[in-house]
Image (cartoon, rainbow, N blue to C red):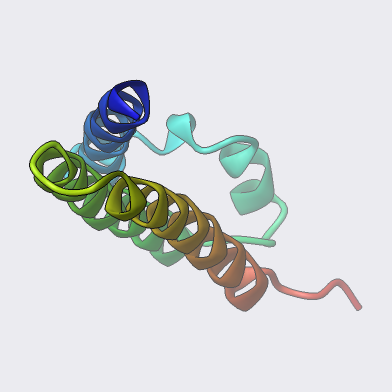
Amino acid sequence: MFILRIILIIFGLLFIGFGYAIWFKRKYNLINNFKNDRKNGKLNDSFAKRVGIIEFIGGIASFSLGIIAMFLDDVFTIVSFTFCIISIIAALIFNQAKSAKKNN
């Protein structure tokens, strides 16, 4: 379980880093195929900003829960790891579905 806690902390730091770069530094090239989708009119800058904030806040939550899990039970580690990963993935999928413009 110690390895899972460390992985949760590392995922948190990675998501914080990518979220910071996308949201604050506007490095939209970190988002896969974003430049082509923006050029084709499928996505806009608000999509990229939402991706950045989702990753940044998700990273803070993952990192915090990873630190807290160091002091708590193994069941909390498994639940928090699963919750963090599923929440971030679900939020990114929802953001993609919300932002994608349909081609007519």
